[in-house]
Image 1 (cartoon, rainbow, N blue to C red):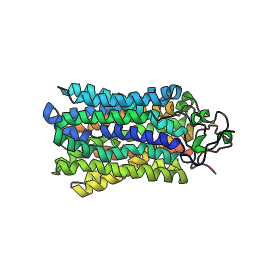
Image 2 (cartoon, helix red, strand yellow; image 1 turned 30 degrees about the vertical axis):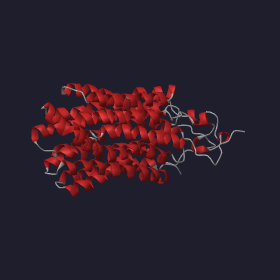
Image 3 (cartoon, rainbow, N blue to C red; image 1 turned 90 degrees about the vertical axis):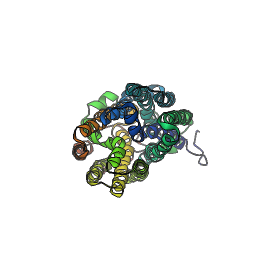
Length: 423
């Protein structure tokens, strides 16, 4: 009889640690971009909108590529895709350090970082869902909390590197860091708990029905469902505003006479809030219902962005950053778990990948549009107000995903985590 020794660490937590490292170095490196905006704008003599487009292109790729990397991970396993992705992130940052024009930054940073995170993110987050049922929201929250911790740690580190090494040296150093940590930790990923002789949550294999991990909707069945349409629409709408602070918060603060040494830590405040949201809101959602919590995250982000539009000094901006990070982190943590709840595990990475194309479109449009609007109006008021409205509309649309869960067969001997419509 095959069992999992109770005195050994459940390998699912190793997979979570690997996903944490991938999101830490991948998104942490990407979210340093705001610290580089003044240097890039000055050295290449270009507008804020043109510089913002670098991040938007990368964001479009790292969320949009999930539609390819997700199904590939379901078929071939997540480890190789994650290792390839982290190598590309390192190469893209290193090549950006030798760019001679802003267009070469588009190519190096946009393609390298964008394709790299796109290869790694959805497979890493998707594989975590297979390892957990009862604590799926908590495990997913820890995995993606690497984004929050990376946002806390990496922008101040990048700012220090820029001061010490210049922006080119800083990109080169970040590239080496991303490649070493990201590729090394990706090697620890295992695609299925059965590969380690256990079931989800560490339960013995004989407790889990054969093929339980493969139960769920096909990609086509999921995409055609009204629940997926509502989730996709909500994520698309909210993403037009969600990523604006990651590019424009530091320039906004500097426009309001806050020194860069104080402005860059505001990104760290988003990281602190994001980490708290991923840890605590993800775990709390497991207990009270992940789907209703998803609606609360949209409303919370809208409320936080409303604070931003009124803030013109450091402390109000810090309050905005902490609150926005909290609800943003909860959104990122809960969304993959909601997908698993709705559609099962058979094609979870592929379904998440298609869902994230909505985020890709919003990321491509939102930050760059905010930059070009600023270039014309010399104000961020309109982009921030649009961001508030987008999240309110997203919450309304998402209610259609909550009302009636998709009808997916789950293992009868090991029940799914509770949702809001159970009982």
